[in-house]
Length: 504
Image (cartoon, rainbow, N blue to C red; front, side):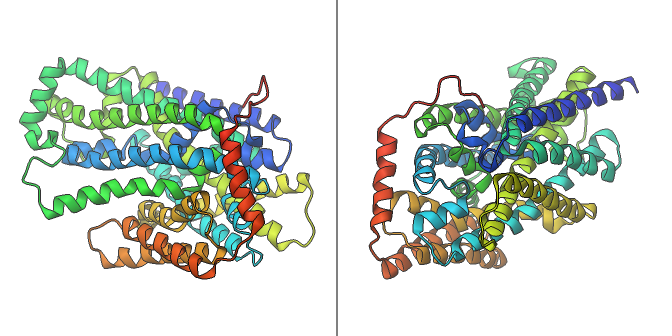
C-alpha cells in the first residue's frame, strides 16, 4: 500500500507541474497569434523537444519496447524510418516553412498557408484542409484518451473511466488556457521525462542482471540469435523486404503532420531551425535507442526472474516498478502518461486552429476581434476535447487502429503538397486539391486491399504525381506568387537576429 502512495504522489507532482506550466503560458498569451502559434517566439530547444514529444505518444514508451521484446530487432526498422523522416523534415521543411508562412501573409495554420501561398480565391483548399484536420484529429485525440484510461487501469488497478477523465481533464485544462505555448512548454517537460525514463530503466535492468555479457547471453538463450538481427535471423525473403519497406515508409508521414510542422512555423527565425534540428534528432536517437534497448534487456530480465509477460507492451512499466524506488517508478509511469498527453495537447491546439482560423473566420463576413478569436480558440479546444472524451467512454478498436491510419492519411494528403509548395513555383490550388484528394483516397483504397505494404507509400507517390500533373495543366503565371517564392529564399539567405532577451 505504501508503494501505491509513493506512485500516486509522483503522479500528483507531475499533474501539478503541468497545470503550473499551463498557467504560466496563460499569462503570456495576449492575442490570437499567441494562442495558436506562441507569437512565433519558440527557442530552438523548445521547438525541437516539443515536436518530438508531440510526435511520439505512448508508442515510444510502450509500443516500440513491446514490439522489440516480442519479435526482436526486425521491429526496429520503423524507428529507423521515423528517425530518417524526422531528420529530413527538419532539414528540408523547417527553415523554409518558417520563412514562407511569414512571407505569405503571415499564415499561422497549414490550411491558411495553403490558401495564401496558392492564392486560392475559392477558399475550398482551406476549408477542405481544415475539415480533414478536424475529423482525423478528433478521432486521434480520442484514441489517446482511451490509451490513458487503459494505462491507468493496468498500472494502478484503477477504474478506466476515472483514469481517462482525470488525464483528459488535466490535459484539457493546461491546453485550454495555455494554448500553443502551454502545449509546447509542457511537451518539453514530458519529452525530457520520456528520454530519462528510457535511459534509466534499461541501465538499471542491466546492472540488476549482472552486466552486458550476462544480458546478451540471456537474450540469445531465451529468444534466439534471430532476435538480435535486423533481418530476423533468417534468409531474407520477399515478405521480409516488404515488411522493412513498409516500416521505413513511416518516415514519409512526417512531412504532412500538422501538429509537428506547426512547431517549425513557431520558431523565432528560420535560421534557428539548424540548431533545433540537432537538438531534436539527438533527443529522438536517444529515445529510440532507449526504447529498443529496453525491449531487448526486458527479455533477459524477465527470463532471469522467471516472469511471463501477458502483454509485452508493459515491459518498461514492470521493470520500473520492480527495479526502482516507488516514487521514481511513479515518475516513470508519469512519463508514459506524458507521452500520451503531449500528443493529445498538441492535436487539441491544431483542431482549435482548424475550427477558428480555417472554418469560423472563413464563414464570417467581418473580421472578429483578437479577444473574440482567443475566446473562440479556447471554446474550440473544449468542444473537441468533449467529443473525444465521449467517443472514448466506450473504447472501440477501430479508433485505436486509426492512429497508424491517420498518420498515413495526413502524410499522404498534406506531405506532398507541403513539399511542392515550398520548393516548386508552379504548384496551383487545383493541383494541391487533386494531390490532397488522391492521397487521402489512396490511403482508404490501399488499406482495404490489404497488400501488406503500408498504405502511406503508394498514397504519397500518387498524390505527388497528381499534384504535379494537374498543376502543369492549370498553371497561370502570378507575379505575387513568384515574388513571395523569391522573398522566401532571401529571408533564408539573410540571417535575421531575434530580439535580445526573447523568451518562450
